Image 1 (cartoon, rainbow, N blue to C red):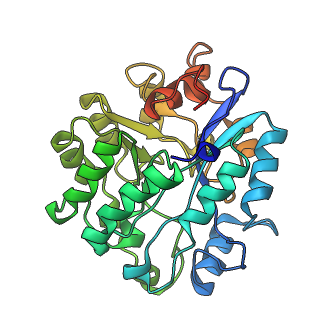
Image 2: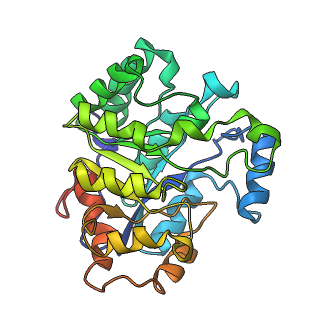
Image 3: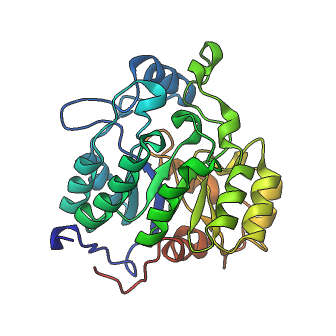
Length: 301
């Protein structure tokens, strides 16, 4: 792997690590969602004019807040018919800002052997530190064994897999939800994956409404499973998730915002009002993320 893809984040110095940040536009102005989905998501999330900042702007945003961020897009070309943004471009952008950004890759699970090869290439040649999946957008059941070779490749690479779980704002309010099916994002489908790939770190993205209890059970039962708390203002977290974060899941929950649709400023403001023990807050903001991503406070490469 080229040295330009080394991670140069001072993890001891930053205040927080946001594990869930979207790059939704590329250098040519191509957006990760088609126009109808983008308009619907802007309405659902009440987004402002900065709905699709570029990767350089994202880096400046987090640098100004003394935070680091995991950045990614979602390759859902087969299911959506919309060409994805370039993961390679995101990795190149993260390399330019390797003091603040950590790139994740994305592969279309329906590409079969090509997706497996792409996993290896993105890790070995572009330095990605994990992979993002959105089962509802990508139209697949994560526990379908046809997709297991992809997880095998990710496990071999020693990086985590981050899966969207629960409802999604993508397609919300459109007839038929734009064809996007929520059942693919039931966290119970990931219980099979975590059980069958014990060396694979699985991160369940978002409080998994309406399956919060199942999500809590899986993260409690499987040592290789974490939950990122992105996509919802903390004031709307299911109460049972807050209780779990304060107790048996205190080392399993990760700060994530879902930027740009939910900003870390908003998330942090609302999290400050949440009934979370003071000693657990730094675990959520940074310590747990370092463990889930296989990083250490001293790491510089």
